[in-house]
Length: 190
Image (cartoon, rainbow, N blue to C red; front, side, top):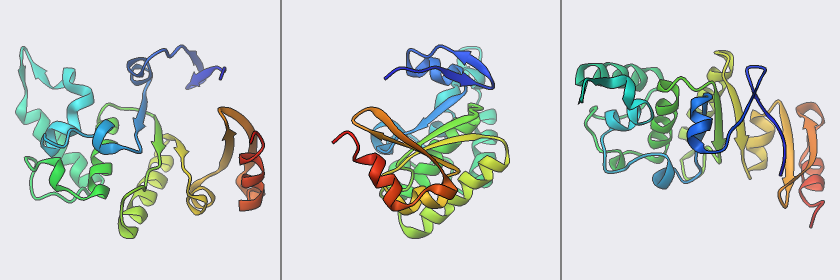
């Protein structure tokens, strides 16, 4: 696949995940337990994981600053946890997903790629994730959502780009998107 990437109107070169992060792009993996959170670490440590350089005082971590930012985001995005020191493995899937989001927001990412954002979470948590995504859009963030759930795509998208076998097969404004039109594009290269 070939193409160009523009962030805030500027063409950027991205050759690695760290390049993407430097350009303000955060990725919320569909497999959050493997690629999103460190389940054996605390909520607070996961929240600042992508931005550690800003929480050091010399060679040491600034615990006060870490606690303050983690507390701010726990409240801001309603992460349900008994404490900052709670191990992430003990939280629900929805709260783990919110921690991944907090990590990228703390890093000040303005483009967020949500890959199957509601996979493995309950209906109530799905609704919370959708509300958070809408709030982020209102705050000026850009969201790219990858989803295999048709109702999710139709509910949450402004525009749908359909890919099949690694190629873009169609692009639809939400007013033109139906399950039939999406599936037509999705099966083009098969």
